Every structure is written in C-alpha cells, then in structure tokens.
Length: 189
Image (cartoon, helix red, strand yellow):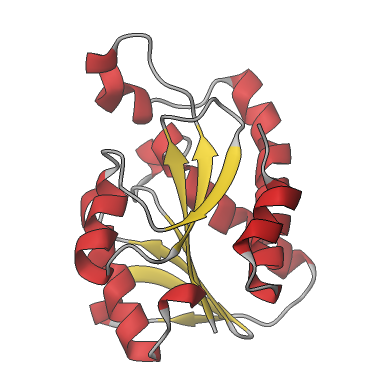
C-alpha cells in the first residue's frame, strides 16, 4: 500500500496558493479516478486529522492540520496501516527550485519547509519526496507572503501539464523501487 500525501493548507482562501501545490496534485488524481469510474472510499477516522481517500492499494491524503502540523496526520495514518517508509510519497512545493521544476529524492533536509519539518519530526526523513518548484520571491524576507500567494494565470495554465507529469511520475514510483530510474525519466528542469 502507498501513502500519497499532498501538502497544503485547508480552506478556500488557500486553494490556489503556491504552498498548496501538493493538494492540487491530490485533487487532480482524485478527479482522474472519478472520471475513470474507479471505486474509491473516504476513510473517516478522527485521529487521522486528514481527508483520506482509498483507491485500491493507495491512500490519497490531504492533512487537515495546516502545513505546520502535517506530520501528525501522516504519522497517524502510517501507524494505523503499518506502512513502511519507502511506501510514503510526499508531494510539496519547493522554493529552491524554479517554477515548473519537478524533482525526486529520498530523505534530506526540510529546507525551511514547515510541512516537511513536521513530517521529519514525527517519522524521520527517509520517505520519498516529490518536489515541485514554485520559484522564490525577489526579496528573501517576503517568503511567507510569497508561498501564500496564488499562482498567476500564466502559471496556472502551465501547472496543468506539470501536475499531469507529476501524476505519471508518482505512478512510476509506485511500480519501481528504483528512485534513480524515476529521477532519470521524470525530472523536469
């Protein structure tokens, strides 16, 4: 079973924020499953602190904890389903990558990302990370406002293709244990 976590903040006002790109990927996967009439079921357990959709051997997760406490939700689900770290895939925004870049890695630092910091503190660092570049503000002190700002219309148009590519990469991650192969085939620069 794979635990596929999209990081973001709950609430309509955050929906198209740069920080919510992980949620946008999960939303698109969910939409694709519905369009293909693939059976899914909502898993409602209060201690999960997340919206969890089960499809076959996949759990699609959007934590309800806000970004800074994402690890609480991921840990609860991981423990309930007794999942191994190599079966946890976390999709998140990355300020250090130019907009549209998609990269993959296992482990590493959180780079100041509070969602990753929370997951690292609850689980450790050895999970698969799908990093989607959102670029960075011109003024470093404006990071908080930047990540909580919406994508521009031009970026949203490009984001459709980036999300589609990311979903294909996630499918590849689930079928191979070779992250190097996934990096070579699906990294976007």
